[in-house]
View 1 (cartoon, each protein chain N blue to C red):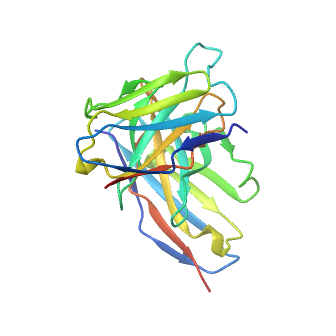
View 2: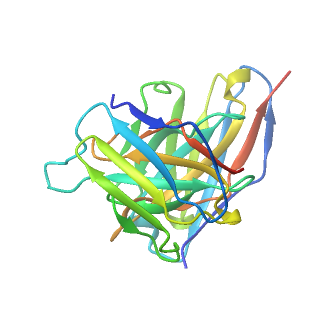
View 3: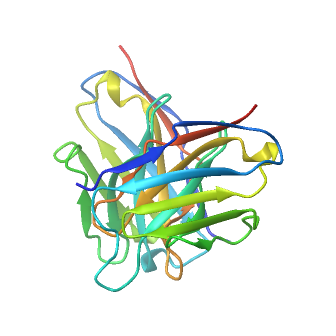
Length: 119
Length: 113
């Protein structure tokens, strides 16, 4: 079955960058798109961006444009989300979510990675 | 950007009773390909979100049939026919019609009275 496994939590200082990973298994990695969604404490889900795992094309939410970069390593079946110029408001759980070719968007979710931004 | 608005934001329900959540979009969600890309997600406390419904009314595999989705255009509804204790959590609608930007609603918290 499809699994998306994310790395453990990170603690970063304001101004730093963080790179979160999402390893996929159970399907052909390059066949589907992967999204990144974040959730600040007590807040709603917030879509950040998307990568076509096949050709590497990306699209980012305007809110994060210029600060977020999504990449993938097809040999490792892994996608990455890097967020720069971190501030305290970026403290959140960051999820990767994968599409399904038959049923569509955000069918599968990783377990989330807590990123804490604190001095 | 498309704005998704849910109501109510909090929904106390008696066990065994029905529940209904509304989701409205600021633009029609009918795609040029004829599909309507409106999904519903459930997030239980401390867990990752789980997709329940895709394209308005299609239940994902393993989702109990007490969950149903309906609607068209800009107005959509998620219904739980008889709420069970395991249904406690936050429910989100999300549009994917106006990709490549996806938008979530604010979330509706379902709790047991």
